[in-house]
Image (cartoon, rainbow, N blue to C red; front, side, top):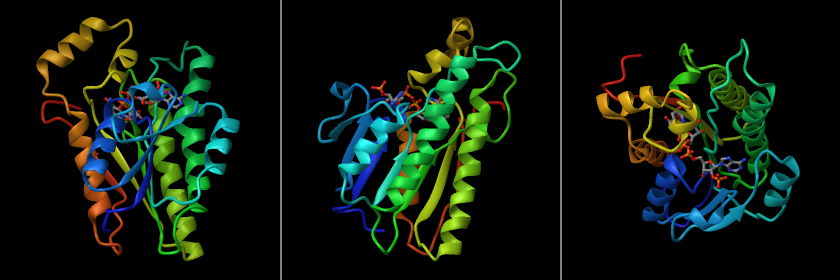
Length: 233
Ligand SMILES: NC(=O)c1ccc[n+]([C@@H]2O[C@H](COP(=O)([O-])OP(=O)(O)OC[C@H]3O[C@@H](n4cnc5c(N)ncnc54)[C@H](OP(=O)(O)O)[C@@H]3O)[C@@H](O)[C@H]2O)c1
């Protein structure tokens, strides 16, 4: 679709992938509403929306204040290292609330704001949503859920005759601050990963998001899997 003058809501727009997506959208003439908790870190040109996505009442308030959207980039996410065998259930809850529940609520609420000709939802999953890495813990299942929710929504929209398109983007390791949480307590492994691999950059993922948005309206890309050529699994 033509992106000029479209309006996009990008969650997690202040850092990493969301920040790069916001910058590339701005370059394409899109009005970007950037949602995160600390809006002081948002890129210039993004309209700030302060919201803690783990608080459903805050999400309700945000959507009640919006009148129109063309694009939702559901990107905010957290990768706490929390094992199933002995991890802290409080960590599972936080990841579930942010990575899954908030993403789903944002999908649902965006539908009412999209034009009749349809909007575009892009949900950030992960390669950890395609196969479970041995250290993936509870994070990996939240990313499987993102794919399941995206597929479920797509079928519902098709059944309803709603032309809104739903895509997921599934990157392997991307060089962002999220890796510090994912490798917490394993800093030597993170250093080794950073030194041995040409990690994906946030801009690489953002380019795929823009590719999805720039396809003709009859084309629905459902998932883009991507990883560094140096990532072995
Ligand atoms: N980096 C990777 O290797 C990788 C690989 C595959 C998939 N992903 C996925 O890509 C997405 C973006 O990750 P990233 O690597 O770009 O992470 P990041 O650099 O750590 O950025 C996370 C963003 O989410 C926001 N956020 C965190 N908690 C929030 C909350 N409770 N409410 C609202 N916003 C919140 C943060 O802003 P505030 O702290 O100000 O709220 C920040 O803007 C995530 O869904 C992640 O799972 C990342």
